[in-house]
Image (cartoon, rainbow, N blue to C red; front, side, top):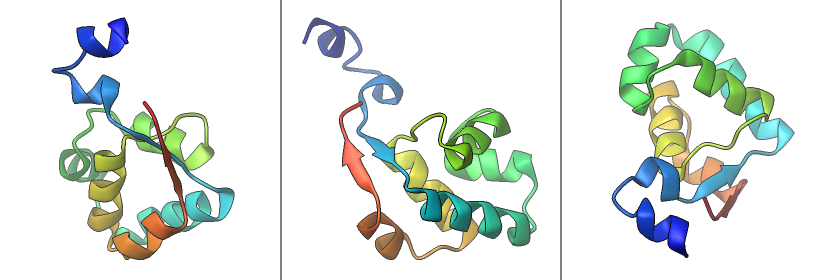
Amino acid sequence: ARVRAEYAGRPEFTAPRVDLPAEVRAELTALRQTAGLSNQALCAQTGISQPATFYAWEKGTTRPALAHLQNYAAALGADVTNLLARVEVGPS
């Protein structure tokens, strides 16, 4: 509770995180590879600063914040509603 209160104004630390199943990670990877977007453009549309961040999501080594995943999926042209139905949203 103390940590949440300390970072209350910093949603990147307190926002709900998403667990991505392997099939969803593979789908996002394929969409990114065919989207034709530069890493810089994809970062800007997603709201993150480094492409390594979305690579880590795709590998399953980190969990994206819900808002970042929604932006990422939309930038790739994914059906965001369908995608969110297949993932688990948990605490930060």
